[in-house]
Structure formats: C-alpha cells, structure tokens
Image (cartoon, rainbow, N blue to C red; front, side, top):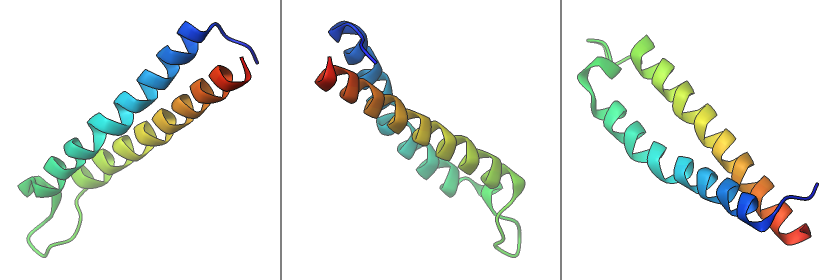
Amino acid sequence: MSLPPFLSLVLILAGLWSLIVWPPFLRRILKDPRARDESGKATRFLMVHFMLVSISMILGLATAVIGIRTLING
C-alpha cells in the first residue's frame, strides 16, 4: 500500500496519541473506588474501562505500525 508521507505521519501520530493517552486513564480507573467491590473483586466498571483501553491501545498500535510501514515502503 502506498500513501503520501503526510498521511503516513498522520497515522503514526494518531497511533502514538492512543498509546500515550490511554495508560494514564487506565491508572486513574484502577484507583477509582468504583473499580472494586467490597470484597476487592473487579466490577463491571473496571472491566468495561479495561476493555475500552485495551482495544483502543491495540488499534493505536496497529495504526502506528501501518503508518510506519507505509512511510518506509512509500
């Protein structure tokens, strides 16, 4: 696949954005009192947010990799 270098850079930046922004959000979620019930088990609140962050980071990584590959293979 071939993309103009500018679009490859946009993909790389979008991917990096996801990889930078989501981990601090997850750390805040893990500290949130709604993340665990009285017995310390994970709640749906935690699981939903964990899945949201996981999927977003996987897509961010894929986006960055696609951007890098299109930039290199130009």
